[in-house]
Length: 289
Image 1 (cartoon, rainbow, N blue to C red):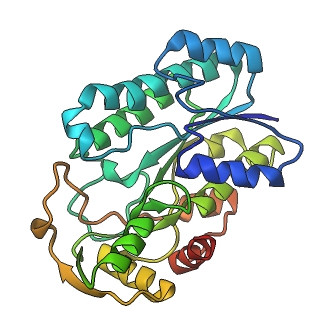
Image 2: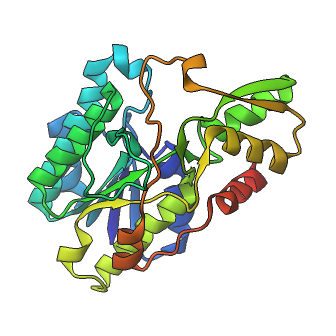
């Protein structure tokens, strides 16, 4: 099976590169914007014609949440137009599309884990463009698999875990937001789940009607950013005092969802995927760092 991975130098894409070794019979095309500009339809269709991928995992995204507020056009081009072009090419070539999305699409006054059928209410440019990217992909290619995830981190790239480790070594005390609740997601666990899904589809272990649509994936459990930071410091043996602060004390250009815990029953039931607890993922990542 031929697998195209866009945004391959990001956190999830980098983890897919590591895990590709577990699928020696598959051919992977790992691309980034320098060799596959998904905002250019001609470039996308040319790539598909030359390489005929059986599946496309779209990890490419404009993820600078705050910068997107003042750079809406670029965010739209990558998150919406790029998704459109990939979906169109996948439709022509009968390619399975996996679209990575975000918990930011919800942002509702809710205190129970979100299900895939819950109402969306994006409150930032990033969230709106990611949701529109989902919608346009599913409209063009109804077999699209959309995976909404949250609080992604990895040993690759820039993320909360690396930032906390750096700041914890530099400072004696840090104020960390405690009134935003969600679940961290170790990118390697997410990448592994995606490859398991594609393998089960390829082996006809799941009917098409049950494979398509929106899915949630994050690690198991619930915490605040404060709890997450505390765990990072404890597992890293970093002596740094953490103080819980409200979101209002740390204003950002883009609004963050106050609650974004995801219900993962659908992906566990349909694909028989086992999901590790968030601290297990954190320990694995810290061991690599």
